[in-house]
Length: 215
Image (cartoon, rainbow, N blue to C red):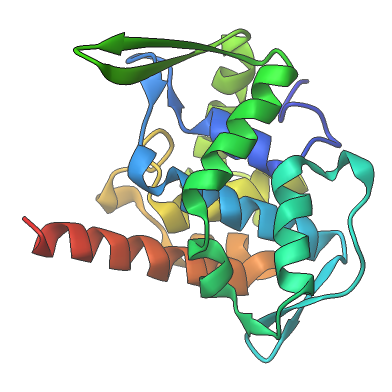
């Protein structure tokens, strides 16, 4: 069964596709999607052993290979050339650029189509899926992972981590109603990448708080 894009594909690509609302035919949570993508790239690097957690800070260990993805390579280089800093800094930094890098990766892989035009001189970008079934299957599996049923230990590793990241970002395409939300399950889903999901949740909450304060 095709679960993610491919088993060896970066989590960032799957996270981008997961944010696509198939009914509305558009991306959701655009204001926070860059944070989710940065967190997915950090998770990729941490799980592959390219990064390590050092007292709540990200430390570069070894560079990723050529197939890691544009965002992963750029992010590892940022961390490698900086002193150890909290994970939250790396989730926040350059989040708009993260969106562009992953969008371009998916365009090159022919998984999405990007159309650009102008309305009253303002640039407009329309993104559509070339293979909607990939996003649909992914959404179904991540939604089931969040709601329960199968024990966490028996979940596909990629689906488990994506579910944890989606919950931290409160991604609308897969989040169950509040009454069905099981915090204990989300905690267990998050364990392999806990420093990153915590940083992502704090970053999204802070961004939403700032947006509310601004009216």
